[in-house]
Image (cartoon, rainbow, N blue to C red):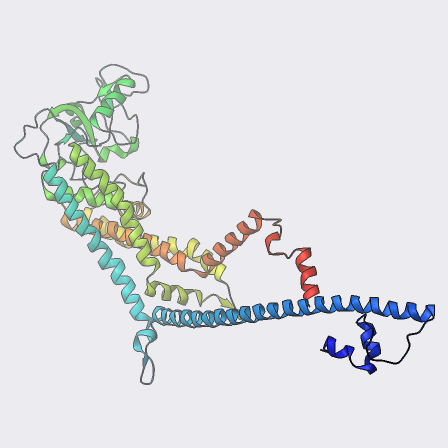
Length: 490
């Protein structure tokens, strides 16, 4: 840049000095005296002063631009550092994902190729069946033994006077040799809190009652449900009758086809001392009670029920614990590698024209595979149980099918004789296995690709309908002033 004082002393810089609005010194040239020339010179001087101010503004903008460039350079360095950290995180996540994938697929490198563990599906089948037929029954039976012994200890009745605390139960048709009752159909005493079948009697005609078998006894079956003694007493009173006596039942005065109670033990009005088989007098009765509760048997293996307050609380805890056990087995089967491998093999069969039909595989599994497996187990185990109990085949089939399905109202009134060891073992095996089968079915459904596709579709459908017309976020849009400012800087 020219020095101002130096420019004044140089005679050849008249034009430049005029731009600065000053007259040159030490010059012999005369200034033009004409009006036009004077105005021209004065105008140039005025314009020179304006350009001077403009130059200062430009210098200030250049300085501001340098600061902005420095800030942008700093931001660029920060972004580069963040990108470097992001690359490191992505590399770490890729390594973790790769390790997890290797573990899930059980890929092991060995000399000559893939290990034998990954190449033999029979190993997966062995793990699955060991869990289903061995581990699950052992866990359930162990828990039942522990809680059953605890209940038996709490409900111990040894040394108590039980006279009058129970009532006699008798078989609905004494002349029929077939029995469908827990503990057999021999005459015995039951605690009043137990649940048994009910037939009401009357010594005089009552509406809806019949006296087909005995002229002096009218009888009726008010319900196919099971009741405690106090409930049974109230129901018969409301129907216009009373609970039948043991003598009336033993004379076959109350037999009949209603609810198939001819093969069940029904309440009588005869008071008695309760036998140990109907209360928690031994660990075995407690064990049968707990395993019936854990397996949700429609027909329990014992008629005993807790009578004390502590026993009732323990019974409630067992019922809640049953939910946790079911969830545990569902979670185990759902994350089981062997079950995932079996599901993958199953889905690989549904490939047509180069496309895998996962939805069809899931529907076929739900509609065909699950019912078929359940029916097959019911046929095999039901037939064995029927042979041990002396039942017809259809009784055993319906009994096992009811247990596997967890029906609150069983398809048959048949029940296992707890004195028959082989029948009890078979019933326990089927009951505990039913829990494992339920867990395996639910776990398999969670691993099916068709089910996962359906879940993805439901989630996407919900997102579309939750925010159909979502407005853009105004906070991320630059203002008009910002746009203008960027244009000025550029």
